[in-house]
Amino acid sequence: MASYLSFKAAIILFSVFLLLLPVSADDVGQPEYNVTLVVFGRTSCPHCQAEKEFMSELLVRYPQVTFDYYDLETNPEFVPLLLNFTDAYGEKPGGVPANFIGDTYFAGYGNTFVSGQRIENKVKFCIKYGCLSPYLKLTNSSMKLELVQPENVSNIMLVPGLGEVDPLTVSLPAFTMAVGLLDGFNPCAMWVLTFLLALLVYTRSRRKMFLVGGIFILASGISYFLFMAAWLNLFLFVGYATPTRVAIGAFAVAAGLINLKDVFWFKKGPSLTIPESVKPGIFKRMRSIVHEGALPATIAGTIVLAFAVNLVELACTAGFPAIYTRVLTLNNLSAPMYYAYLSLYIFFYMLDDLLVFSIAVYTLRSRKLDAKEGKIGKLIGGTLMLLLGLILIFKPGILMFGG
Image (cartoon, rainbow, N blue to C red):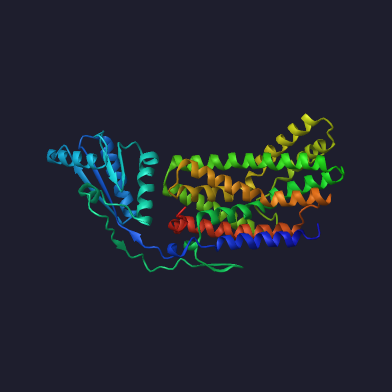
């Protein structure tokens, strides 16, 4: 494929364009809103005390929040007020703590990972988009939101090769597509596919290339989706835990530095590559699939190969999935939307594979990834991974998109 480098350059430029794509003019320099959380509890309620401890930490991170706590045990005169609130929200009084924020009411507090995350997600949403004060809802007054002027701090980053980039002008869909595309150019993943296609070319059978290559790409996409879903559910369970966020950021920084090191000193010191010890086994399995005559055995062997390859690639492909799923959980999304974004990520992750595969089937020509192309992939991927890791550690708010 003489045009392979031009094709890769075009895809990389497209991914850069997605990173620079703004959500809308209204999102740039968007002001923040004050948020009021009204809670009714009791002194003897351990869940109420747990929520108060959580809120004391949350208020440090979000100074825009006003936390009004009414103790029904020490001040029984607050009971009628609670009844008025539940009536205004169209609810019946439940347990305590009773929480009112924006247009949302919920009773009870379990732990930081579930209930705390629910509160924080709502707080982040209200800060960005504004929510009705519970007191205004109580009195059926018209909504009036107080603007809080954002700090005059520049979020502009200088990205090598890209110039100045403002992360606040990037949307979550554009971020998803760009990172998915760049992740797809991981030399480990591309190396396996191009080697398999090179073997299939010698069969001179478009049918076999389409069957084996197509099943391999599909199975790889499914296994990668499951791998990322595992990361996502882990982070959803952990919730907004600062040590976890910092650990993932540090992991991304380390992975980015190792990838950048490999551009100049490949395999000198630690390297994020497929271990040499497992490559002979992969080659052997590929050749057996290419020469297999029975259709069921070919399909089964290809699926097993795809899942096995994704397993051994974890060391050199885990960086972007870990970063992206952590960023995803920083945003206030429903469960279906989390998986919709994962699906979008996987589609763009597989897009370069699909295009390379289509060209190989059409032309009956293919070639393996060379060292220069591998270095380009590591340079771009390592740079982005390093930047995202630093943002995740020091300025995670930049990665809280509008959806």
